[in-house]
Length: 391
Image 1 (tube, rainbow, N blue to C red):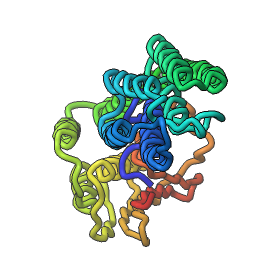
Image 2 (tube, one colour):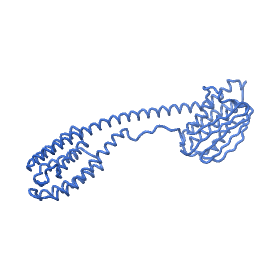
Image 3 (cartoon, rainbow, N blue to C red):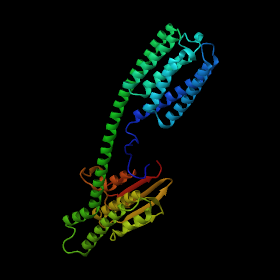
């Protein structure tokens, strides 16, 4: 059970979680795809070097592409994708496609299975995933055109046509897929951001309402209680007791203001309850308070709830005696206020009555606790306050 207010909506740390997930996926996958293609392609490229492949061109080209693949993957995984990075990848692939006649042996060129064909496919797919459509589609067409020119120069026109069709399908399918995903993700993030704004407004409104309710409780238990006593005729004229009660109300309100300005650290609940008794000097109370430390907001709520319960004894059961007990049973803090007054039927209390509903039950609910009221006519009243420090 929480130490402070009851459960509240949780605000996410990002207003675009779907977009963040999309970015993570579509940077990690292209990095891994480029790295695996570069390393495997290097091995395949160097394994077949029959003429007209020129080793003097092939070896430096493969080395440069391998270094680029490793650097590309490391840069993307650390810093993400940038426009120049995508442009550089497309440019290197374009140059490599144009050099097919001296990089790929004729016997492995057909069938769209050469290492340059795989490189071209990887590049056009990565471009669609990492760049806006207005740049990625032209980049894909550029790589496709370079492949057609390079394969045609190697006298493999059937391969040029077949893989060009494959590249075009890859370009447009990847572009459509990522475009749809981006639009759907933007809508999801828009809805999520609207929900977050509404949640923030709800939290602000809830905080304002709780502050107002807390102020009403404090006024009910001090000034309004005193005015009610005067209005009911309990004070017939000048009264030293009335003056002392008014002074006590002022001290109480001042103490509450000071308490709210202090940090919310551990507080001795038994000491807070003894301070409550000093505000009710005319009420005979038997006290049994075990040492107990709780968070300051919890101590405030329990102490003020106990004060409201004891004040009800003064107002509604004059001449009665009361008992105040504090104990900790396992992880549960229990405070009981009992009296031997005339009692009442809780079911008959009007709904507009503020005392038990807000000054006791409302306060305890505000810190995640609970209050049980037991009474019946002729049998006194018992109010049990409970709070647990276990979620």
